[in-house]
Length: 249
Ligand SMILES: Nc1ncnc2c1ncn2[C@@H]1O[C@H](COP(=O)(O)OP(=O)(O)OP(=O)(O)O)[C@@H](O)[C@H]1O
Image (cartoon, rainbow, N blue to C red; front, side):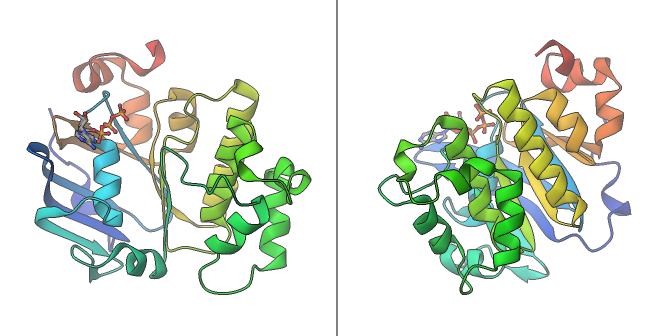
């Protein structure tokens, strides 16, 4: 199994995770995660269920604290920085549970997400084009949206301001195929604008279409890093790394 063969070729990554260990209660969940996110493009974080993908994202944003190792964001050590400050420094996080405020309107959810000031109308127009239901239900309570529309709002909250890095946890989980396409198109649009994205995604078609580089985790570590195309084109490698070829998922 190759060990991080491409790491040296990635110059000046926007995010550098250096050997982090994170415990949840008495459990040793992350056990020396090394991962680089290049500037520009989509880095996929893959692996079986329960191997630590979400915990890795949550350790970056500071919801869980790494007790060993270092996390460098745009060159700054954020390992012990409060979550609100990390977010303000340009990190957008789309959690798996969507993290929206059900009792607030779509508009209020968006206003709160724009941490640096009033919403930029041009950016909002772009979001409405990507996710038309958000315009339709602008004054409705977010709790009344459908599952797919809630996911759109969750991603839109991260997209409402230009962030240096977007962390996106399973954006297509549990969604119908038509909504998955809408989601993938919006993320592709974000990528085409030059954004840097670290994304957990179990949907192979989406991972293959969007991913530039890939990292596969197992048992609390990254066990393989390389080009997404290399992994997508090699069922034997997929079987070896994830116990199942991605096409078969
Ligand atoms: N709050 C918690 N309390 C106890 N254990 C937890 C908690 N959150 C996560 N874990 C455990 O940590 C491990 C890693 O979970 P994590 O959610 O990071 O995995 P994952 O790779 O994202 O999985 P999935 O693909 O299923 O979302 C799992 O064994 C999980 O049961």
